[in-house]
Length: 308
Image (cartoon, rainbow, N blue to C red; front, side):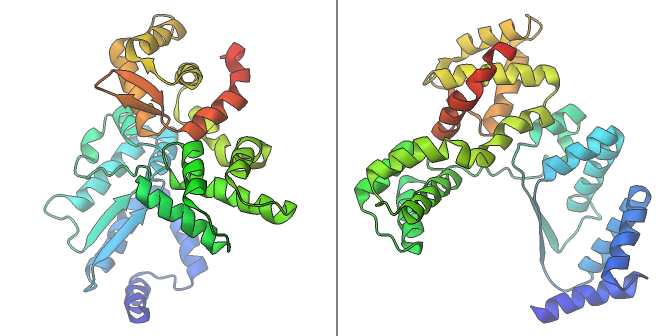
């Protein structure tokens, strides 16, 4: 591994004037706005000259593109086209592959930019909840790592509380259970799981874990879209499920009859991709994608009903 990174650094050192890392960062910051294509070309030329396979993992890619688009829409499209050319075409990279990820779906942003063609070469992989068997093992191992043994009844209670077994939510609940057991000297039990879920996971102790699901709506949607989305999610939180037609009627009401069914479907597709909602095409019904988020929304955000 050391030899591999030595090759990369040697290539960079031989090709870039500034050797010191700090100076290199400063130079990039100064030039990136005007010469980002050139800098990118230099970097990938070095990478392609090394006899190794590279896998670049770019996290929060949609957020990066959005920030670019907010400042300069044309620049964002140009970047996406340049990034596509790296992966496709006669001069594309041969030794490099890319994985891009993000906490929100990129399709909505790309469609607004009119640049869907720039990502059509990617294979989309949606990371869903665990299977029941994996979730069972995951819960057991989390407790075991904290020197606690749990039985199947304990595991079943946690899964019923969480709903779809998203690992992040499982970790929050288990962590809070272990924390309470340690600080208050109480026993890990199914009854404790219910108490911790209601008082801690859905309480102020875990507020920071969930606030972003609400706050990011204002970051990725226009004020009008944000108002509509919040109204739709509040309605979804109040019921187990709702028909597509009934939710569309609410959408038209909130949008003052200015929307269309096509606009509604596109908006709901975004909410499904971003793990707010779930759609059952066979029965044509929508529901909240996560029981935890639904419970959180009911407790903390129904207070906003009159203001949205």
